[in-house]
Length: 99
Image (tube, rainbow, N blue to C red; front, side, top):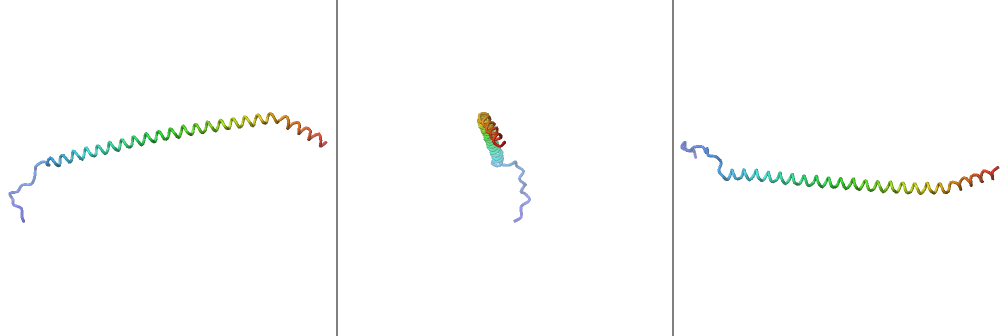
């Protein structure tokens, strides 16, 4: 089946269906890109919110622990001040009994 020499090669521009597909493909990839960018922005906002919550939680916990430390330390100091004279008196009596 040889081709006849009368046939000319196809030099016409692509049909409109090919052109439509090209436009559809560009618009589809543009829509995909937009969806990807929207998803990335949403994930970035979620990460920022999570980081802020973690920092806020860490600050609250640290404040609570410092408050507990100071309260406990204050109570122990007060107890020591109250009991210290008694300790001196007992040591003095203990020292006198041994001589």
